Image (cartoon, rainbow, N blue to C red; front, side):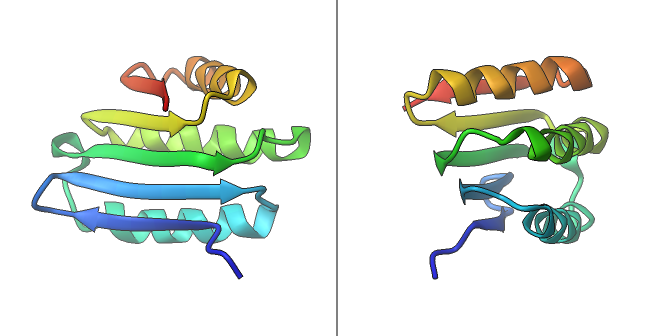
Length: 114
């Protein structure tokens, strides 16, 4: 089975490298948040960039939006230097990410299309 996500710490580059793909269910979101906390608790987030590869991610379903919004709130709360989301040329997903960032007050975010 293909991996739905990973969270990898790269201290040399001061990046937390994440990948999210496919469609998430609440259990996937909970598991991701646990792994995210493990990585973040071992660093000073203000010195790091949180970088997501979302190029294989599907548009977020309505029932998963609150989970994703909670994650965006976590990213803001953690205090990263910068948060970057890389998406395929997917206008809907890009709009979803931009709206969630606005809703949670995550201002140091960049959503880029590949």
